[in-house]
Image (cartoon, rainbow, N blue to C red; front, side):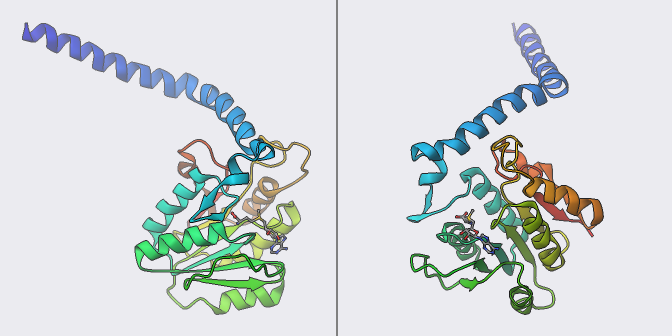
Length: 241
Ligand SMILES: C[S@@+](CC[C@H](N)C(=O)[O-])C[C@H]1O[C@@H](n2cnc3c(N)ncnc32)[C@H](O)[C@@H]1O
């Protein structure tokens, strides 16, 4: 009986390998693509019903981020162990608090987060500093640069004004700060029909395309989109040189 069972197992294994090959080569992109696009739209727009990003919190503080992207940030921080995380677009401070909490777990790192104006409801945390003004104001960029020390690992997250010209200006202002092997994350690249809000106009995705056309130091790291639902399609930029 044993050889028959072995043969049955072998056939099951072969069938599994075959199914994986067929799925990978023929169907994955189409099957996943349609489903993921549709779910991304449903997820993003459900804030209108008070769900998803309208009611996502970290330790009680609202964040606009997709939880699956937060998981990716957790993995990035564990791998990179950054000394400094720069975030543009604080809003209520939930994403800054999340990043600072992971730094707590790692025992390393601080977060500097920038928004136009102060709010009195953002969380106090010893690893977070708040700066105010436009993220592309030369004095603010200089202030952030002044917080880095030689040899520091620096990660940058762009999540402020999502219009192309602003994101492009941020990419150019903060790209230099990102250390080799680390990331420049451009949030909300899904705007302007990629696949949500086709009426938005040129946004983060268009800024990334223009930036990468003239900057050889960064590559899109698609492996960071492995959880399928992400607000940052094509937005995880790894500094490779
Ligand atoms: C999408 S929210 C940030 C969400 C936050 N990172 C989170 O995940 O919870 C965008 C924020 O960017 C800020 N903002 C808009 N234009 C800006 C600019 N030029 N400089 C800095 N912040 C800006 C807005 O005031 C708003 O609070």
